[in-house]
Length: 144
Image (tube, rainbow, N blue to C red; front, side):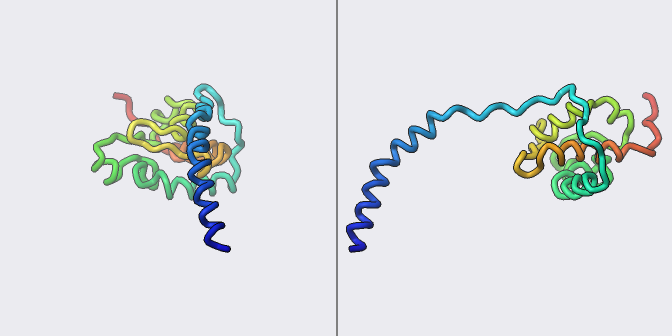
């Protein structure tokens, strides 16, 4: 009894597999991520939100950007990349929140993207609050 069932199951896989493969190839491409380029941060910073952002930062970002955000890490040096200094108020004032959101969400150059399944938009906006706080209380960079 089991043998005919297995043969029937195997045969149905051969019959339906090409149709399933073709259907997945014909599917519409996923929509592009929405751009937040000029958008202000819509999320109000909270202690809880900043704590979540800090945890994610320590896991995904600190290895290149540094625990304090200055970007001076061995990994960044070994990759031959210059990482923005989040502790420099001048550097941070040159970037709009929406631009930072897009860079973090989509990646840039060698920086990988932060997938929406890993960090939803609220966490991302809190991440921007978190990295902006790294430059508070720091003296501005000297003019050059």
